[in-house]
Structure formats: C-alpha cells, structure tokens
Image 1 (cartoon, rainbow, N blue to C red):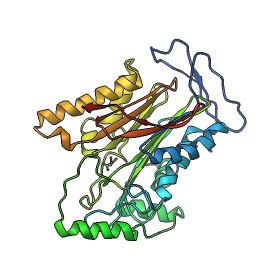
Image 2 (spheres, rainbow, N blue to C red):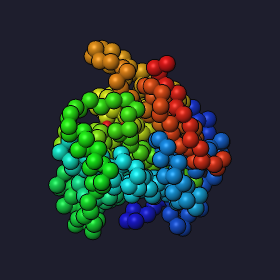
Image 3 (cartoon, rainbow, N blue to C red):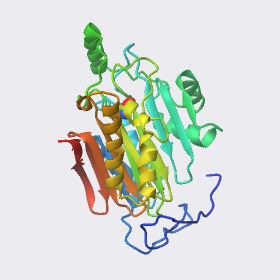
Image 4 (cartoon, rainbow, N blue to C red):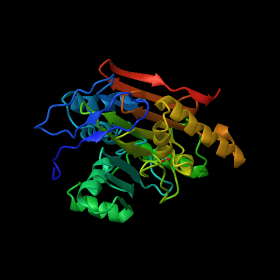
Amino acid sequence: MSNRRNFIKTSAMATVAVALQSFRSNEEEEPIITSGKINKPIVISTWNFGVKANGAAWEVLKNNGRALDAVEAGVKIPEADPKERSVGYGGRPDRDGRVTLDACIMDEFSNIGSVACLEYIKHPISVARAVMEKTPHVMLVGDGALQFALSQGFPKENLLLEESEKEWKEWLKKSEYSPKANIENHDTIGMIALDSFGNLSGACTTSGMAFKMHGRVGDSPIIGAGLYVDNEIGAATATGHGEEVIRIAGCHLVVELMRQGKSPQKACEEAVSRIVKLTKNRNKNLKDIQVGFIALNKKGEYGAYCVQGGFNYAVNDNSGNKLIDSDYFLK
Ligand code: ASP
C-alpha cells in the first residue's frame, strides 16, 4: 500500500454523542477501541447469497482486516459461483447472449473504482478495485474495461454457462423485455462493512437485468446510485430495478439522510418513499417495481427497506450470521 499512514478523523455525526476516532488499519497498528457503543466489526449484504458472502468477509474482519478487503473477498463468493445466476460467472446474458458485468467499490478514503458492461472476467469487483488503485480514472466500460483487465493479468473466461444459455434461448422465442419485480431474473450482491478500526467500505457486483439491451448499465456500478460510502457517516447499497435507483441517486441519498440524523432504517424508508412518489408522478405501476436498500452507520447500526415483500439481507456481526426479511412499502 503506497499511502500507509495514520488517518485520523473526528466524526461530525450529530447523533453520535462521543467523538469517534478512526484510524486506517495496517499491520503495525492495533485497532482503536472507541468509547460509546459501536457494533463492530459488522458486514451486511443483499439477498440469501449474502450469508455465504458475509462468511468470507467475516474471516477478514474478525482478524482485524480492512473493510475494503472484507467486502472484496465477500462478493467474490457469489461472483465465482456458477449456481448464482445473477452475479459474475454463470450470470444470465443480455438479449444478444452476452454476459456483461457491472461492479463498483468504495473505501474509507472515498477512493472509488468501477467497471460496466465488462465481458469475460469472472471477478469484476477486483477489476473495479484495480481501476481504483492503479489508474487515474474511476470508471472503465466495455472493451476498454476488458483490455485493462487483461493487462492486469485477469484471465479471459467464458462466463455463459449452459443453464443461462438455455434460458436465454427460451426467452428469445418471445423476446419480451419487461423486468418483473422479484422474478429471479436479477439480483445484485451489495455489501457494506465496518471494520474493527471503525472504517467503512462497500462493494456491489451484478450481471444486471437478465436479457437487457446490450450496453445497458444499471445502478450497481454507479457510485452514488448502487453504492455509497462516507466514512464519517455510513454506507448504503442497493438492489432491484437499477433505473429507479439511478433516478433518485439512491445510495447517496440514503447516506445524506443518515447525515441529517436519520437511522439507517429511516434513511432506507425515506429513499424508498422517493421512488414510490416518482413512480406515481410518472404514472407507472409500483407493483412492477422492486428496489431494496440496506444501510449501515458508523455505530454499526443497520437497516433495510424495499418497495415490496420478497427482499432479504444478511448480517454478520459478533452475534453471528443471520438472514433477515426486509420490511417493505407495498403491503
Ligand atoms: N440493480 C441491478 C441492475 O439494475 C439488478 C438487481 O439488483 O436486481 O442491474
């Protein structure tokens, strides 16, 4: 790590009664035990596959690793799993039969990296991290992202597996593109973590909406939409219809609401209510939309909310690893 130096910040968060000191982790430092009740380390992530992914992240966090390393290690689990058909290897293709992946990552220093519409690379999250750490840019797309990945030594692999190809051929018979809520044609892993040093990071990775138009990019690789981290305040990540998340700059909004003093739960609820309002204003049917947010603040408090039932998220802290059904708006 090039900039291995102490990093001291005083939290301005109004709701935190005590000043929290957060130090950048490295091998020479011990975690700082801050006063006040802080639930750390903790990692939370979207959907069922979050349980396994959190397990990998927890291995890093429990050994006083950095949240950034934890979230990368965590989301790589579903990325590499061919049975998870909405993320990474084995993901469903676009309508032209091409598997195109979106991912982004953000650390405690507001370093960011992202790739969109990346083909042939099993771990887009690690390419996003390489964009963050090794380029002067924050986002690479399509062929440029692939060329960069190959130049960094990432292997070129076929990501389209038999099951997904079969489903795509079936879909081609009607070729109807109408994403439905909670139908298993999408799902993103978004993961946010607070490490023992009190630092936050996040990662988000997906193959996006199944059978999308070639070149379509959702919220997941867009910093501020599918993921946002502010090390003074908290972090948020999203899943569901990316177009709706982008419309409200969703995760940035959730973090800003926490900055105003809202709990992670209330911040997620208010972001969902924006989506509800805009959907009504645009005369669209809310029943066709699903968006879920999860959020975590500097105290290790967390929350989640979504438009309609069916969304769940995984939480791993010192009390164990559990899956929680998110509360929702449309009852
Ligand atoms: N948000 C992702 C996208 O729009 C898909 C999902 O999370 O379900 O690409």
